[in-house]
Picture 1 (spheres, one colour):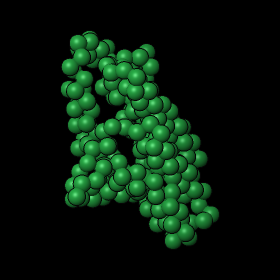
Picture 2 (cartoon, rainbow, N blue to C red):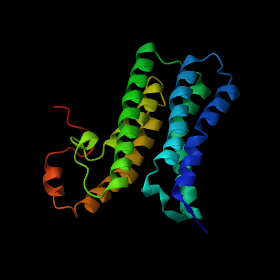
Picture 3 (cartoon, rainbow, N blue to C red):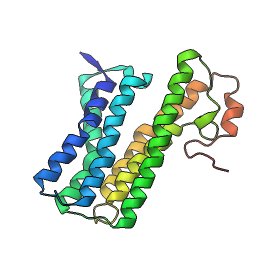
Picture 4 (cartoon, rainbow, N blue to C red):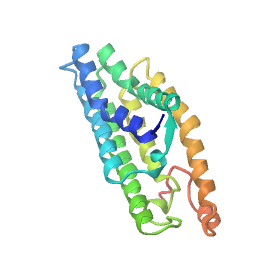
Length: 211
């Protein structure tokens, strides 16, 4: 039996708000503002992801995998819930500066991630080729850049705790083991286009050139 990767991803991200809500109640953190801010950030991201998957899906996650690999995907995504557990189980209350920084980082990340994915979806729907304008003008992987900021905002929320390194390591592992190989694979696939070589020279890999 083989199932689409998107089903496991959508499930894990879609129930995030329920998981955080459960942790808030389980650890009696009803009056913890930090926990509720995290609920809004990570919970809304999960809902937005499911909506994106339905409205403008990414073909990458349409491929089918075996049950063992699907469960591995689910396990990996569960690790992203580490900040939620740290905040609720320790009763951590972040400073105002940290909360503001996390919200701003999250907001910019959502803009880059979802808007660039929408641009790619619309472009590929009506034509094939290399996207070199809009979000792809300064960066070859703006959607990954947006996702990096989103998950970085979750790490920022626990930055003042002694366990901040746990979600930081988890994010780093995902970047090294999953994200970078995927981005390199995309670059190799797009190299079939004649203009890719020149495009690659004038664009950043993941962090957009702003000047």
